[in-house]
Image (cartoon, protein in one colour):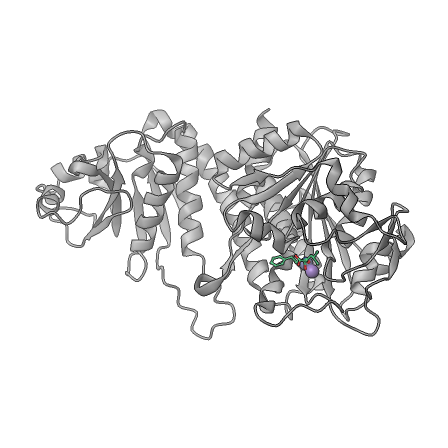
Amino acid sequence: MDYAIETAPLETLQCDCLIVGVYQDQQLSASASSINNSTQGVINKILSRGDISGKNGETVLINVIPDSSIERILLVGLGENKPLSGKNYRKALLAAINSLKKTQIKSVVCSLAECDVMASDWQWKTRQIVEVFNDAVYQFTAYKTDKETESKVEKISITTSETELRSAQTGLIQGKAIAEGINLTKLLADLPGNICTPTYLAQQAFELGKKYPSLDISVLEESDMEKLGMGALLSVSRGSRQPAKLITLDYRGGEKNGKPIVLIGKGLTFDAGGISLKQAPGMDEMKYDMCGGATVLGTLLAAAQMQLPLNIIGLIPSSENMPDGDANKPGDILTSMSGKTIEVLNTDAEGRLLLCDTLTYAERYNPDVVIDLATLTGACLVALGRVPSGLLGNNDALCNDLLAASETANDSLWRLPLWEEYQEQLKSNFADLANVGGKDAGTITAACFLSQFAENFHWAHLDIAGTAWRTGPTKGATGRPVPLLSQYLINRAHG
Ligand code: BES
Ligand code: MN
Ligand code: ZN
C-alpha cells in the first residue's frame, strides 16, 4: 500500500473514494461540509434520509457523486461533536477502512486527520491513519492458491493543510516505518513452524540487514553458544532436529560508544512443550511462540527506517521445543551461562531457559536498558486476558517510560509486581533455582526467574502471550508490541 500526503483543495482531487467525517446530530466535519457544497448538497441529502446519525463507527458509502472527479464519498460517524478520544478516533478509522473492503476502490483520500482528537497533534493523527489502515488490510495469503485480498485499496492520500504539513509528513514517515515493521512481524509470526524455523528466522534477519545497511546482522551457532556456556538455552534445542540460533541485530544510529538499548525477543518457532508435552487442542498456535523475536525484527526495521539517533541491539534466541530421546527431562539440572544451576521441573517452561542465557549474554553490550518480549506464560492470559501485555521490571523509570509509550501508541500494558516474596516459589532442593514456581502467579514467577539473570542492568519484561496473536475465527498475528516499542524508541530519540 502506498501512503502519501495531499495538500490540494478537495474539489480538485481525483480518486475512487473520499473519506469524510460526520458528527452525531448530523453535523459535518470541515471537509464533509466543503465537499457537500461543491456536489449539490449530496451529503445533506443522505443525512436527511436518516441513513447515518453520526454515531462513532457508522459508515455510509455514497456511490455516485454529481459534478465531481471524486467517484465516491464514504461518510464515517465520529460520535459527539467534541474532541474524540484516541480510542474512538481509531474506531472510526477502522470502521472506514473496513467498509472499503469487498469494493473495487483503489485510490482513497482520507480527510480524517482534521478531526479534533484529545491530546493529539496532526503527526499522531496521520500516523494512526497509516497504522490502522495498514493493520486492517493485512491478509496472510502466502499459502492460499487464490491470493485475492478483500481490500483492493492501493493508495491512501491523507489531506493536510499547509500549516500542518511538516507535522503530517513526520507522522507519515513514522506511520509507514511502524506499519512496515508490523507487517514483517505479522508475516513471520503467521508462517507455520515447518517453514519458519530458527534457521529461517536467521535468514530473514540477514535479508533485513541487506535492505537496511545500518543493521549489522550476526548469528551465533550452537557451537558458539557451547563455548559461551549457554547450557540453559542449548538444553532446549537438544530435543529438536532444528539447530538453535542466537540472532543479533546491531543498529548504531546514536553516539559512538553510547550505551545501547537492548531488545530481546523469545524466538520459539514451535513449542510442543517437550517431554512435558502440551495437549493437542490449540497446539498449532504454538507456532506463535516466536512473536517476541518477530517483534524485535519488526521494531528494528522501523527504527532503521526512521533512522533513529539511538544505539539498539536486538537479540533473538531461537529454537524449537520438542519431545525427543535427547530432550530435557523433568528433574534435569542445567548450568546456565551465568553459572547458576537450574532444575527443570517442567520442560514446557522453556522460554525462560532461552532468555536467561540471552540476558547474561546482553551484559557484554553494557546496556542502558534491556527489554525482553516473550510469549512466556499462559498464566498471563488468565491474569490479563488479551487486552494488555504484562509488564514487570526492576526499574521504575523504565517501566514508567514503557507505560507512557503504550498509552501514546494505543498498545496497552499493565504492570504486575515483582516482589521479593514471590522468589520463594522458585526454590529447588537440588539446584540454585527451579524453572517453574507452581500454579500461583505464573506470570510473576516467570519474571522472577528472569530477574535473577538481570541483576546488573535496568530491565523490563513484557509478557505478550495474550496480545501477540488473536485466537478463534480471526486467528492471526497482531504485530504487537511493535507500536509500543517503536513509540518508546521515538520518545527516547527525542528525550
Ligand atoms: N509458550 C508458552 C506460553 C503460552 C501458553 C503462551 C499459551 C501463549 C499461550 C510457554 O513456553 C509455556 O509453555 N509456559 C508454561 C509455563 C508453565 C509450565 C510454568 C505455561 O504457561 O503453561
Ligand atoms: Mn512452553
Ligand atoms: Zn513457549
